[in-house]
Length: 157
Image (cartoon, rainbow, N blue to C red):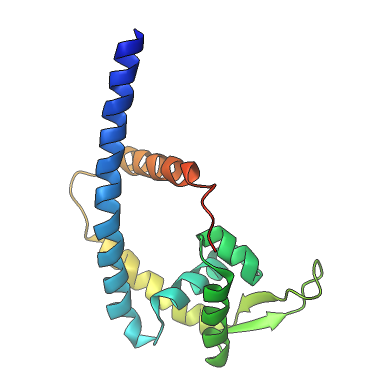
């Protein structure tokens, strides 16, 4: 492939990746609204849902770990954790690796609430249907992961 062909391919790729970004924004905002509508049953905000699900998937974590993992500010995560703790959905436990940064873990009530939310979300995803294959989803995950990785150097706070 010549230099001009590589340059054109690079430009075409950039245009196609821009299309992905143009779809991700509306998708995120619509999903955000759907989560807000559906979480009223448990009384969870979208932010609280995000941190509870992270704890459900990964187990106990510190607030800074959650912030880094989800590209959220520590202050935002701390507010979500404080709200969740006030409702008895999470608890603070000693962190053997760091005395001043407690681990946060789900309580049974928190696990029940986030599981109900995730189960409802999965029911919505099952209705997507169409001709999507596992390979299509794998490719989507690969592309979005690469795009996210390309922005790793962006400051969160």
